[in-house]
Length: 255
Image (cartoon, rainbow, N blue to C red; front, side, top):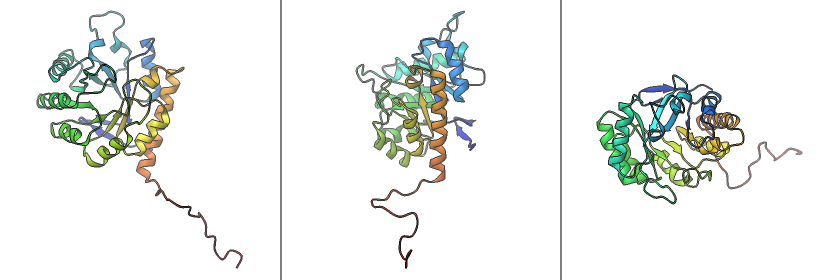
């Protein structure tokens, strides 16, 4: 099944976004991207050193990949805006994932500051992907502020706890007319498939791949799961019944 995905002025064939943090050896990132088929890769702007002869994380991202720099480390809207401008000035493009986090225990995003940053950056021509704590009203405000997509968390960043916010994500998918990309907390390929079965436009995975025993193989497993979940959603899954219903008629078989 091949299905185009249009977002931010680009057309993608993969609905799998991957992150680049937490790898013991960054050189494996290129193999992860290649095996997963991912076309969008997010990287923290604060980790990019364009002057470094060695160790520049951008060296491990294959040419032609859509770079999605993120504002990790920002605690306010204005800090996020400053980081986004630095990323664009450094030649990292005009896509930006807004992360505004000042909660140091659960690392939950500040929706209010995120909305503010989204509005400023969208006005400046950025293609904005706000990472947010699932909330329908906040999601609508981000959309209205010019977000190209909305990225609700499944669970706390790096927790691998899965879709703890499933019901809120379901509501956002049903009510918001921009792509919904589930980000953070997904720990297993089956959870990524579940997000896609719900109607998510895409899934972003980092920790579950980076901390796996075989990161490259795990990336491939996630790719299969995301494709399967999307195909199931598009195919139209059967109704859920409260009682049993026979697949074949049971009456009058023996007269």
